[in-house]
Length: 359
Image (cartoon, rainbow, N blue to C red; front, side, top):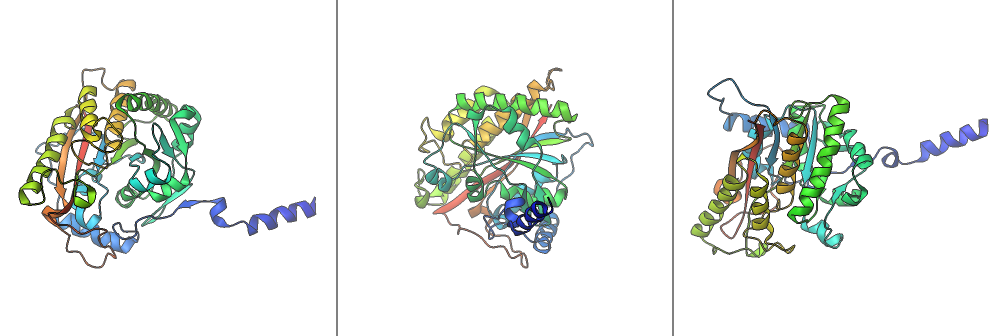
């Protein structure tokens, strides 16, 4: 027995730490900030230059979900900020994008969510723990609705972009990362309904309240415009930029603000992906699946939780919209950050933040 115990101890000491306690590595160390001092400088600049206006009245409904950009902080920082100041919940479900690199490597995955097995994700103030909800979902959600791949999550930056902001606001935040693959609206409805059932059960078991204890955070950028994106439908001049950003705003205001309705989300989905899986919609959002799926999930979650029984509804509000060309790069030094792509009238990206409350 002594030999066996010694052997076990020796093997445990020889095993690499990553195998015992895997931490998801950083994907983008240029556009995002992963050191505490640098992110503090960045946030101090944002708070000073872009202060949040207080509401006219002290009453403000608790937000239960939100949409955030995931573009470079030196471009989109002021658009991230007004959403994250309102997120108070210690648990956050992050609904991320499946970008092109993942689609290519995994042969255009469809009709499921990507999950992972990391015990933590890196943040600027230390590692961020994964919530017990992640494994609860794996146990309760039908297996056809998700695949597990650390490789896919390791390649994707849309979820990690949320982490420095979340951890800045709450050092003890826990996350449940989910990546949405390509899927038609009917499949989104099917999977989001099943996932909402699992979340409701989890919340009841843990005695959690949506918005106060758990939050749905959706990651997405809006139009990607330029010849290198194969998207110059309006041309390549100032008027084209105005038309493109106006169209972004129209989509947000028409389909993602006001009372959430399933048919509005269906129409948005059709406009974003154009009825096929080649991205031939009216515009080129990288959130063409994460946005409708995440809002559908929240919509079903509030109904299944009984939060709309008094005649209230899940209601969206646009917090901020901008794009890389309009505002350019923030003049901040000392953060260690840069930009991952240039901006011009021939290459720009739109982004927005939105908040969802029960009103």
